[in-house]
Each structure stands twice: as C-alpha cells, then as structure tokens.
Image (cartoon, rainbow over all chains, first blue to last red; front, side, top):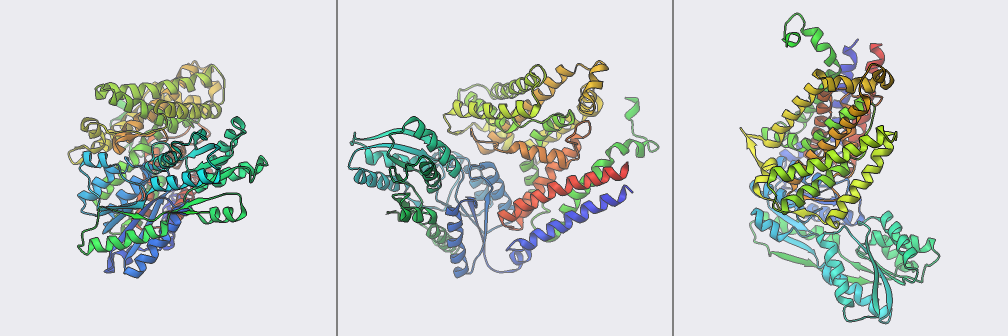
Length: 315
Length: 323
C-alpha cells in the first residue's frame, strides 16, 4: 500500500502543472506555432502599481504591433537573483527580444551578457544598467528608455521651495540605498535646494520603496523631529505610507508632502489634500515606447542610445 | 566497508530506508515529463544546466537547514547570514585579499553567527525560533552597517569562475553542489555526527542520558547551518558579481520549503539530505517551467504554495498508511 500514495503524488503534480499552464495567458503551443515575435517584459515586481501601468502600456502596444508579450516580475522588488533567474529562463525559452526594468543597476549586467551571447536584443527601461559594469563585462544594450529622475527630483525641490517660501524643516524618505533611480531623484532634489539655507533637510532615511516602511520610518522621524513641516518621499508608495503616519499624529495639512510617480492613489491624495504634489512619470508610455522601439529594432532599424519619457509636476 | 558493498540479495532491504524519497522523486519526474510535453524549451541540456545552477543557492542553504530540522530545531537567520557573509567576502576581495582568504573570511562569519545561535540555544536555553529570529535581525543589520546599505560589486574573473566556469561542460557550481551533497549525505548516514543529529531530534532527553554530548553537537549543527549559508553567499556573489546587504531576504523560507518537500519532519528525528536535494530541484524546476510557459507571476506564487502543501500532505498520508 506504499504504491498508492506514490501514484497520487505524480498525478497531483501533473494536474497542477496542467492547471497552471491553463491559467497562463500564453500557452506554449501559441508561442511555437505563431509567426508573431515573442517579446518578454521583465519588470522589478508586479506588486507595484507603477509596473502594472508599464505592463498595460506595453500590452496595448504589443497588440497594436502584432507581437506576443510575456510579462514577468519577481515577488520582491529587491530580489535581484530571482530577476536574473527569470531572464535566464526566458533566454532558454528563446524569446526574440527582452525589455527589462532592472532590480539592480549592477546586478543586471551578468544576465545582459548572457542575452547578448544568445543574440537577444535588450532594451533597458526605467532604471539604468551600470555603464561601467557593462563596459567591464563587455555587455551591450540596444537602448535605454526612462524618465529623467534627476530632473524630477529638481521639480519636486523647486515646488517645495516655492510652496514653503524658502523656509522649511524637511524630512526625506529615500528608496533603497545604492539604486540609481532613487539616488538621481535625491540628488536632483538636493540640487534644487542648494543655496537656500532656509530649506533645511533635518532627516533623510531609507524606507526601501515600501508603503509600510514609509509609515514607520516617518513616524519615527516625527518623534525625533516634531518640527518637520515638509516631506519629500522618493516614491508615492512611501509618501502614502507617511500620510497615514501624519494622520495618526493629527498633523494632516500641517506637513507638505511631495511624492514621486503620480500613481492614482497619490493623485486622489492630492485632491483630498493629504499630499501636496507628485511627479508624473509615464510608465505606460515607457512600456509602449519600449515595445514600439523593439519592433523597429527587430525590423533592422538602428535606435538612439537613449530616450527620455517626459516628466511633469502634478499638484 | 563490509556492510555497504552492494549485493542483489540485500538491495531491497538496503533501499527500504530510501523508499520515502520515491514519492518525492516521482513528483519531480512527473513535473519534468509534464513540462517536456508542454514546452519544447524545457528538456534541453542548456535549460537543465540552467535549472541546476538556479537551484544551487537554495540547495546549499537547505543542506544546513536539513541538519537543523532533523535535530528538531529551526534556523531563521540563514538569509541574513548569507547577506552578512556576502558583504564581508566582497569587502575582503575589494581589499585585495587572495580569493581563498576572502572566501575563508566569509565562511568564518557564517560559522561564527551559527556558533552564536548554538550558544544561545544550548547555554542560553532559548528556543531555536527565538535565537535565530534575533540573529536574523542582527546579521541583516550588520550587513547594512558594513556597507552603508549599498551593494559592493565588481570582482575579478578568478573569483567569478565559481559561477561562470565549467568543468567538462558542467558549471563549476553544479559540480561543487554535487560534491557537497555527497559529503553531506555521507555525514548524515555514515558518521557519528549524523547519528547524533538524528538522536537529538528523535528524543533529546534519551540522547543526553545515553551519553551524547548534546550541547556540543547542537552548537556544531548551527555552525554548519551558518557556514553553509555563507557558502551560498560565495555562489550568489560570484553569480551576480555583486554582494547586496539586502540579499537573501526570505531565503530561509525557501530552504525550509525544500527541506520539508524532501520529507524531513519538522518534528525532528527524521529526514534526508537527498530528499532535500529533490525538494530544492522541484522548486527550481517549477519556477523555471512556469517562466518557460509564460505563466503570470501571481499564478506562479499560488502554484508554488500549492506544491509545498501538497508534497507535505502526501507525505503525511503516506506515513499514516505505513503505521
């Protein structure tokens, strides 16, 4: 009777994998028989509305262009190893082209080299791949499409400067340290405040792009600096977390909150008055442009090295 | 030597202790067959080597986890130890130390954290869950402190050979993994250490009364767990060409999952290293296969959860029938 369970196990596994492939939007038979080029978009994670917007934009464009799009992402935005695995697996699946929003600017480089070796063109979106690491490893990317995060940070700084009339006690919520995107936003923000001694940054702490950490870290900052009256968060998720901490402290309206990304929830928060402004990137457009350019590249066209997606202040 | 020379007569009896793994192995084989039918990209040499390489990190951590769990313990700190050992290794490499010395430094950090876990559990009488939960936070914080939160990247090709090199067409990391598992299996089933691990997990009181130096062996078990987490940091750092202080988040859960899928009992006293390898491969094959099929990331998480539960459920049913 040892036999029975050992039969159940494989049967269950078989059922499961069949069910899973049924749930997938792209079955293998579609991939292998159709003439459509298969393009893979690998984002940092699909748990973040920003990348879901990017996915929507890319899907709409792929449909218009007659391409088949596979979208994948890791469970955690910071899981560089899992992102690498996903891309390795897609290379094995012989996708025609890769569009990647790197979880780590430097950690992405080894797998770009692997894609190069397999002859698969790579467009990098949103977050740059480290140019020095790429050069050192001999890797090539077809192009980079992203927002100018430095300019966005500057816009946020200029807005606060004007709104606070040149005098504020500012707290900053940073993304994950060492990430190109967050660093660029912060340096743009600081550049806008340079030469205005009234605009004092009294605390600057990482909240790792996460909403709950935005809440907790800002709550802690408020304990240490009860006089803070302005906040710049390097992403809306962190800003939205902080607005809850502000509400819990009974300080709604007394602290001017500026976020980044212009997610739907942040736009609503601005209407409600819990946030003052955010910086609009256009992830949907980023996704769409990436697919558009990838089709041109597959058609033999030579792309520019870099394209910026316009950025604007929403208040 | 005499007892384990293969003989046709004793073969069924000698295989009997491994019968537990047949069910798990069958799951792996059927997964493989199903994927071969569903996608032309699965059963290729390149893809199988790819899966093997992707399994290395989890499989290395899971060996240590298997020892810990068989001894009726748990180690939640391995993901953080991986990060801490990785950044120490990276700093040592950047300081210009020879590769073996730098790797030694990383391993020493892992073993050291493991010894502290062991001391807290034995001398401090803390439950393993609490001691390693504390270490999980301490080692993570230490990794962040050591790097100021930033990744350390860019290493020489000599070091990266561990991830990129090949021996007779097989990736170095996979060869080393096979050697590690052979040694770990031998240690568990053929040495005093292995017997004591089972004895401690089966009934600690009885082990103590029959003269097993329980404290010393428990410390050794956690030291091995920490050391193997550090070893996985060597592979991860070489693979990514970067050591991140936030690396290895929730990897302890993957290692526990591989161990449990492989038939090791969370109650202790029962388990095998080979089962854990199969468990880690099931997780690796599943992730690879779902990527190849283009299944949505959300569905993937559900499927992996279902497989973990199903594997353990089947195991429970199996045991109940045997009794």
